[in-house]
Length: 478
Image (cartoon, rainbow, N blue to C red; front, side, top):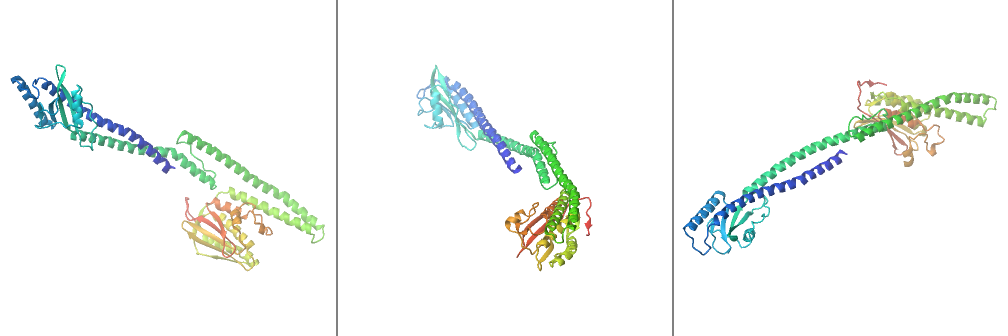
C-alpha cells in the first residue's frame, strides 16, 4: 500500500509546487522587465525635455541657442550610449527624414517591428505600450518611445532600443533561486510524505500482522491502538474486541467439545457394559448384538478422537531444535509390528541426522497419525516409505504409501473433519485423524500437504521450519 500511496502524494505535492512555481516565475520575469521599462521611460522623458527646446525642423537651420541645445542633446545621447550600450535617438514625424540626434551615429528606425509600433504610438501622443515579455531564451531587444511635445503638438519622438542580456540574466538567476526553493520544498514534501504514510500505514501493518497471526492460530495476538489516525485507532480497538470475542467463542467451542467428549464416555461405557451383559443371555454369534457392539466401540473411538482434537487445538507448542531424522526413525520402528502383521513394508530412507524447529511430542503424534492412515489403506505386499529431507529453510517429512490414493476432488477435501472417501467407508476410522495431525502441526508453525504418489497411493508431506526463536535451543534425542 505504501508503494501506491507514496507516488500519489508525491505527484500531488509536485503538482501544487509547480502550480505555484510557474506563476511565480512568470511574475518575476514581468517584474524585472517592468523595472527596465520604467527606467527607459524615465530616460526618454529626460531626453524629450531636452529635445523640446530644439526649435529647428528637419530641413531648417537653428540659431546659436538652438544649436547649443542640439549639441547638448547629442552629447547626452552619445554619453548614454557609451555608458549603457543603449541605442537612442530623436526622430521627427517624418520617419524618413534625418533624425534630430541619434547615438550611435547613423542609427535609423526600422519600418516594421516593435520599434516602428512604438514610434507610431508615440506620434499619437502616447507613451509606447508595454513591450512583449522577453524570456531568458530569447535574444530580443526592448524598445521604448515617448513623444516630444511642443505647444501641444508632437514634433518628434524619442526612441530607446535596449539590449536585454542583463535583464535576461537576472530573470534566469531568479528562476534558479525559485527552482532551488522548489527542489528544497519538494525534498521536504517527500520527507513529509514518508512520515505521513508511515504514520498512517503503521497501524495497518500492525493490524495485518495481527490478522495473519490469528489466521495461523496465534489467537492471543492483539493490536496496540496508540498511534495513527483516529479512524485507524478505532479500527484497532474494534479489531481487538472482535479478536477477544472470536477467541472466547473458540474457547467455548473447544471446551464444549472436550467436556462433551469426556461426559459422554461414562454413559457410553455403561451402555457398552450393558450390551456385554445382554450378549451373555443371547446365543453365541448373534448378528445384531455384534453389530451394536461394533457401533458402540466406533462411537467410543470418535469421542476419543474429538477429545484429542480439542486438546490439540488448545495446547501450546513446546518448540525445540529436534533431530527430525531420528524422530522419524523411532516412529517407523514403533509401527513395524503393525506393518508386519498386515504384511506391508515400512522403512525410513533419508539422512541419518537433520534438525528442525518443532514440538517433538506433537510431531511424533502427527507422524503416528499419518503412518497409521498409510498402513490402513496400503494393501498386503505393498510398501510405505517414510523419508526426510531439507528444502531451503524447512525440513520435509514425506510418508508415501502404495494404497489406492485419492482423486483431485478428494485431495481438495482430505483433512476436513469427519470427511472420508466414499470408496473407503468400509475401513475403520472416524475421519478425524488427519484433522488432529493438522492441528498438532499448526500449533508449532508446521504445515501438511497431500499429493498423489507415483505410480499409486498418497504422498503426505509435513513441513517444519529449520530455524526458530527461543531463549534456549536444545537438541532433542527421541
